[in-house]
Image 1 (cartoon, rainbow, N blue to C red):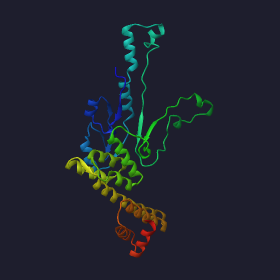
Image 2: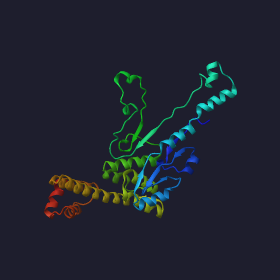
Image 3: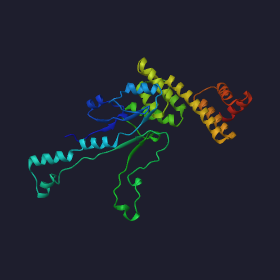
Image 4: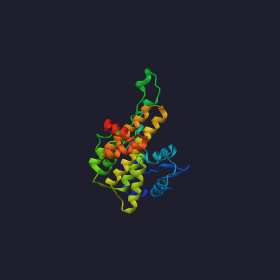
Length: 303
């Protein structure tokens, strides 16, 4: 009887065939693509998913269905029944209670440990335990058992160190992208080549379409991403984000402060990616319809 069973979902990147080799259980993730539901690696291969992603299909993800999860737990959590069957076969009970229950005082079960990996850009604002989800009168709160969630947030995982260097890289690069710390990415990873599948994971976590496209293209050419080229993709995406933030805030607020924030964001992004001041001046001139003198003054002010 196995003492440890590892259960994860297909977001882990483990295929069903790899799961059999590793001796783990992988729950297939449901995906809705253009309104149609698929199960990852069951009726939708990873290659098909990446192709749909590249084509810009409307993709929505969901947690594994509750019924599927409970059925899988019922299938896996048979430890008590197995212990009872062994005891019944051996017949070495020491009391009537043990005989009726099939379970001896010295028998022990093994715990179920659930780990939730959250890779949203914003801070987790959901419950951290069962009690956080309940409305409990103060008089009986001490009588209610609590179950804490083991939560790992990618955006605040700097203190974690994983034995697998690929996992470390995914967490580190994703965390730096969330922090918009492109200078640090440039310092640490500029001369690195990484597997295309890691680039896909990082792109999916951070919702970076340019990085996803770059990884898919690299996968077809040999499976390696040159981080120097990938950084250029991130730079372009970061500049565009800065422009969009400024335009959006300017439209929403209807005030000059919104435009100024867009200019500041664009200048900061250009500086972080080591874009020259001359090119930065040209960028904000074109984007915000400024004169050269105005653009030069803003670059000097916010650089």
